[in-house]
Length: 200
Image (cartoon, rainbow, N blue to C red; front, side):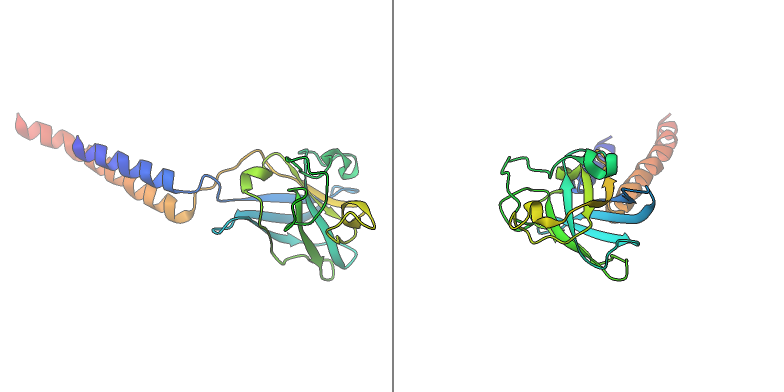
C-alpha cells in the first residue's frame, strides 16, 4: 500500500513538473482564397517569451511582413473578423515586440521567394496569452511605430490562422516517465494477489 502511494506521488510530481503548455501548431490560410499556406508552431521559451516557428509558402511579396496576434479567433471577412491587436492593457499604441504597446505586436516575418521559415521570439508573451486569438500576417512590413502609418504600416491582412483555446502537449521526456510509472503500478498490482494467496 505504501509503495502504491509512493508511485502515485511520483506520477503527480511528473505531471506537475511538466509544463501545462509545451507547444501547439496553428494552420495559416490565405485570407482571400482560404488556401492553406502552411503553419506556425508556437512554443514557450525557457527564459520567457514565445517562439514562433513558421513553415509557410506563398507569402508574397518577398520581404518583410507585419505579424500580429489579434483579439478574436476568427479569420473571416478577409481577416477583418480577427479584430484589433491583442492589447489587454489597453495601451492603444503600436511599439513592436520589445515595446510597451500592444501585447500582440510580434516580430516581423521575412519571406524569401514566398517561403517563410525563420523563427522569431516575442519576449513579453506566454503561450496562454495566445489561446483563443488569431495570428495575422500582413501584406506589407512593420516599422514598429504608429508613424507615419498606424500599426506599423503593414496594410492588408494577407494570411491568418486561429489559435485554439488550449491544446496542452506533454513533453516526450515527461510522457515517457509517466508511462514508466504506470507500468510499475500495473506490475505491482499483478503481484499483489499472489502475495495475498501465499498468506492463506
